[in-house]
Length: 261
View 1: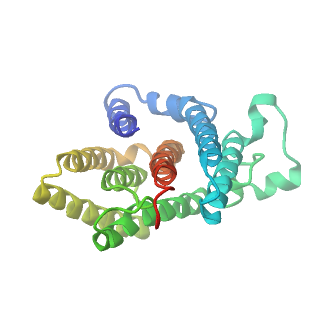
View 2: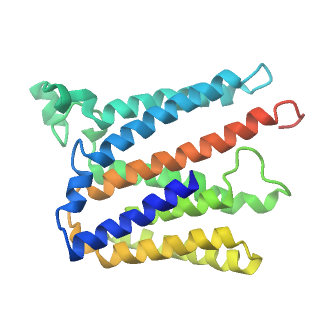
View 3: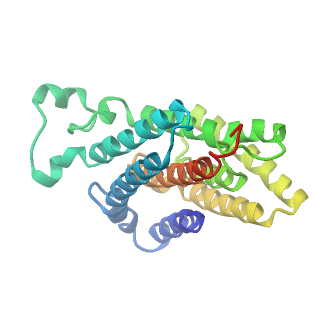
């Protein structure tokens, strides 16, 4: 999964560079509505839902109720999000939402997530993922001699940070600029820490973050108000969440026979 994530992150930088210097339609063709990135996102969401259901079946009576409920809830939300991503087949089957609903929807589509501005929806998701998979591990890891099953790995935190930095390749508002500075500071701390401890895999992940974020920030004027950053972000965030769920729940099911897990 990490190889796939790093490949997609670096591919994003390559596509943006190609768009800047060669084919200005390439990025649009990949990230347009009902395009390759959107359908990959739908498949990733459905795959996440199926994976979570499979993990749910492996739980036994010793599994805490909150783990079961959380897994089932996320499986349902993943399936719901897959339908939302393609507006429940509106463009595929050619039906329209009611006029009153279209007036409430920012993209006049049959979905719920566009009832709020894209910037707000995007910001909420990025904040939640960054808090859960980057900030919490940074704050808590030093408290444990061995990482508990639910704590994201260092490598997952780094690749999550790389994904969030991709989200910031269009920087316009003051909050976005402040957020970008904070993200760069966190990446710098992780880079120094990985060098100090000679964690070369982590250092490689940090280098991917620097390379990609720098490239996309340099090319940020290509995307003044386009949908590309949200389409790419959605796919990568889902893959990050899938990587976390697979690792955490696999450790959970593998450690259930041990007391205190």
